[in-house]
Structure formats: C-alpha cells, structure tokens
Image (cartoon, rainbow, N blue to C red; front, side, top):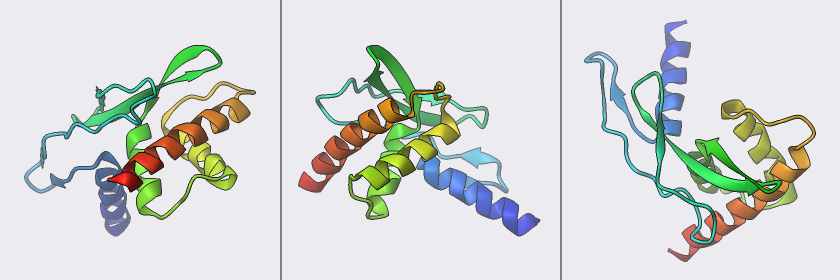
Length: 130
C-alpha cells in the first residue's frame, strides 16, 4: 500500500510539474506555465489545489462560451512528451484525460474533441518549432 501511495504521489507531482519533499512536508513553489498557443484564448493562470500547489489552466471557446479547463497545459505537455501527435485518436485520449480534472457537460464530447484537437495541434506545432 505504501508503494502504491508513493507512486500516485509521484504521478501527481509529475502532472503538476513540480516535486515535493514529503518527509519535510514542503512543496517547490509552483511554476507558471504558458497556457497554450498564441492565437487561442490563453492566459498564464493557475488555480489553487487543496495540496497548496498551483495547477495551470487554459481558457477555450466551446459552443460560443469561454470554458476554463484545469490542467490543460500540463496535459498537452505530457501528451507531447509521450510522442502523441495530433490525430483523431489523440483527441479521444485528450478528452478522456480532460474529464479526469474537469466537468464536461453531457452531449458535448464531439465539440470538446474538436476544440481539444485544434488546441493541441497548435500547442504541438509551437513546441516543435522551438
């Protein structure tokens, strides 16, 4: 059980993009993460987590409304580092991962997939150019 708890904590640290000294009970200061491609509704913001860390967010337009998606910049970076290129299959995986951290209204999966794929493709292209 302890090994599982340590592994989960390590995965959370990886997703958050920072690490902590669990024995000392201190966290590394949250880093600011760019919230996405230049032509999107990006902002450099973070929301507070109950663990006292900052989780980057990204605002996107879905169905004519601005929607704030928690952890989207980190999800994009994790997908890119895993070698996942923008594709229809990746859009489904992105949506499944986004749903872990965000509430997605019923009957909007296709809209979300389209927007997530567009935003990820722009992020992927921008990061590949650097």
